[in-house]
Length: 137
Image 1 (cartoon, rainbow, N blue to C red):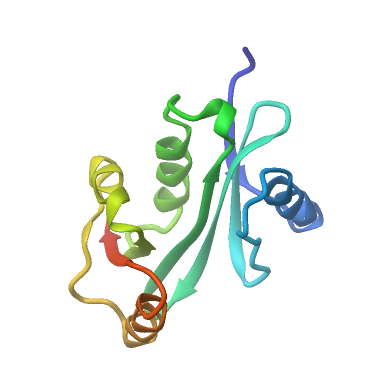
Image 2: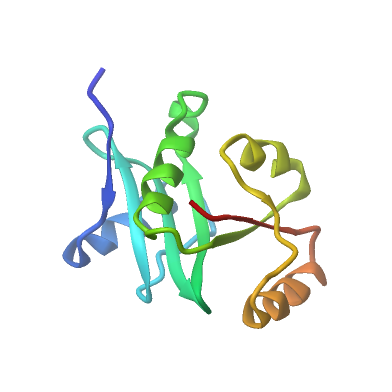
């Protein structure tokens, strides 16, 4: 088993992140206005986007390849990305069923969302159950 590396993806390699999402039939997409973070063994095995939002960041697109789930890769990738924010708050939206997972890595319910994210959350909640969570380190 190869060691997993967690790092921000360099701009010339951004297409690899969308290739990863497509290979797993994920509807997620890399956002060019975000920091793109990946976990790699040799190939990408997990990815997420970290976008500037108000006075912090918005974490989106967290996906781990099904064949490597349960190894703590999501936790380590989120930790690497959040650690890069130098203490700025990080928010995310998730299905309520994932609340326990995110609480396990330090997130809590977000009661103080920036207006731009609050409005987006309200729009998302029209179509599916979503909650907002946040962390500051």
